Image (cartoon, rainbow, N blue to C red; front, side, top):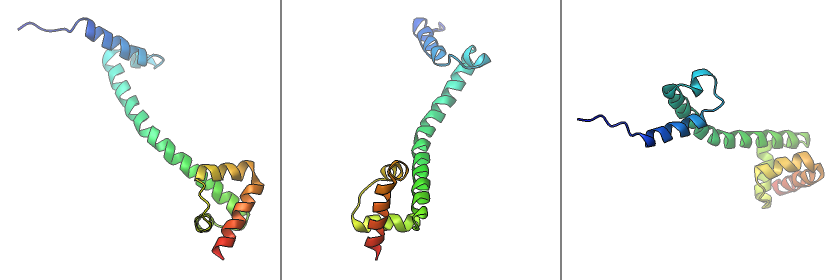
Amino acid sequence: MVRVTYGAPRRQKKVRLFRQAKGYRGGRSKLWRTVRETLLRSWAFAYRDRRQRKRQFRRLWIVRINAASRMRGMRYSVFMAGLKRAGIDLNRKQLSELAIHDPAAFDALVDEARGALV
């Protein structure tokens, strides 16, 4: 049997992967096997971290809303329950932006939530 080397397609694949590994240190950008392993790991981390970024932002927004609502004498869970009961449908990203950039509007939301709970 003749050994098949794939010629041009293999070279094109290697060129493409070496280009993706550009900027890595040492053998991670120079040695074929190491480049392949490094890129597989980097793709796995990128896939995982695209999902983790969403979780981390949600945690950040909740921390900000909690801090802002506690400054106004209300816990986060009570505040969110009050908003839901008042029929105010704002997501956590919007609420955290309001807490930072428009305290007067956030005060009004806290009052609405407090009124809905009583």
